[in-house]
Amino acid sequence: MEHRLWFRLSRTLMPEQETIERAREDAREGKSPSTQAGEFVREEIHHVREGKHGARSPKQAIAIGLSKARRAGVKLGTPKGPAALRKKAAQDEKASKNPRRKTSATRSRATEAALKHEPRRSASKSALSRQAKTAAVKRGKQARSAAAVKAAKTRKAA
Image 1 (tube, rainbow, N blue to C red):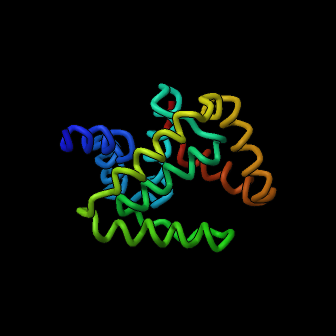
Image 2 (cartoon, helix red, strand yellow):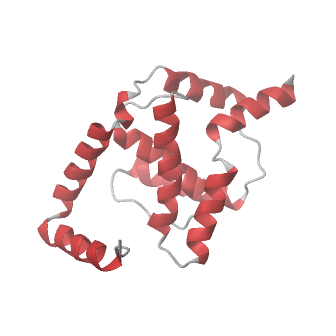
Image 3 (cartoon, rainbow, N blue to C red):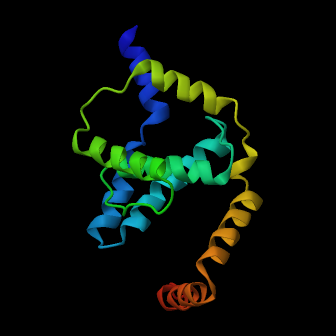
């Protein structure tokens, strides 16, 4: 019984092996940590879309993905923002150092149950587009322009 329960929890709250492998491949290719972390965020968006669980907002889905990335050992920088956010990031990095540690089954169940009540629409194309636009506006005109130039340079020839 206990083994089956652990499998159920690990399936929901741990990143899939395929995602970890894609992130490792990105690392081998010398891609940035944010690109590696993008694989975990993509997985999380997919989970919300397929109805595995929900998210209150696109930001929450992204945050869960980034947390998974940190716990999997992706070297993301310390986030700007409130102390609680920085503390959580530090906690995730510390967890990546000792990955064999068993997660609390009670806490995992509670997290899973809470996320199941959240809406699925937060991972819709329109919601993610809105989130991307607001994030880009916060970065400023020059940063957006530089990103567009870089995207044009690195775009694959069709």
